[in-house]
Length: 94
Image (cartoon, rainbow, N blue to C red):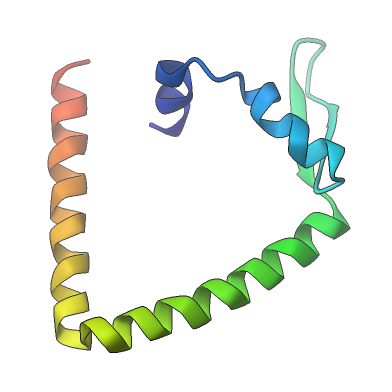
């Protein structure tokens, strides 16, 4: 589904990765054949992901506390139900 979304937006995966390669977060290496490439997260990329994950956890905790744990659980369940409906529709339109 993710690749389908890339295709729909017309964004080249390589173009989307360019800033990450430029900033040394991702490295593009040879793939399993001459036509393929592999994106690998660099050490700097792992450090950045760790920091981002920590920040995300803090923000999410504050939001859940403000919103209410019960309300949050209901919201998550509703979003999951919506995702499943969209996935079913996507399968039906293929």
